[in-house]
Structures are given as structure tokens and as C-alpha cells.
Amino acid sequence: MGRIKTQLIKRSTRKLLEARRSSFTTDFEHNKKMTQEMLNFPGKKLRNIIAGYATRLVKNEKEI
Image 1 (tube, helix red, strand yellow):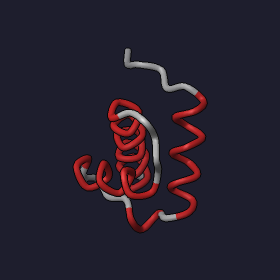
Image 2 (cartoon, one colour):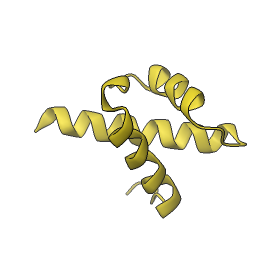
Image 3 (cartoon, rainbow, N blue to C red):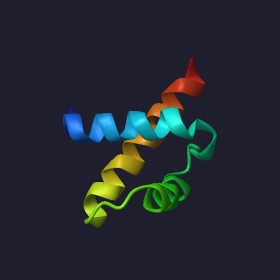
Image 4 (tube, rainbow, N blue to C red):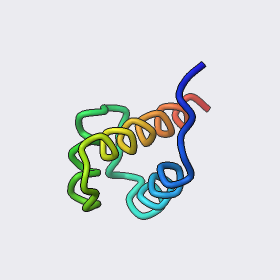
């Protein structure tokens, strides 16, 4: 079992993906940079969680 994402993470990631779907790829490092540019979250950990969740959603979308 993995870690459960909070509503803040899910909501923020979905808003980012709705706004700029083409900016996100399956590469975590690229998504981390894009998240940093788009959001002003105070912490690195929160940015990394959002970037990781975005990467996961993009990967799952491409599999379907």
C-alpha cells in the first residue's frame, strides 16, 4: 500500500493539470520544475508530492 494523498494535494494537482496539461510529462524532474514555476508553495516537500502525483496521473492516462 502507498501513501494516501490529501485533498489539498489532489485538488492542487487537478487544477494544474486542467490549466496546463501539455506542460506535464512522465518525467518527475521536469514536473517538479513546472510545479515550482506555477505554484508558490512554501515547502519543497509539498512541491515534490504534487509533482509526483502529477507524474502518476499522466502515466496512468497514457496507459489507457
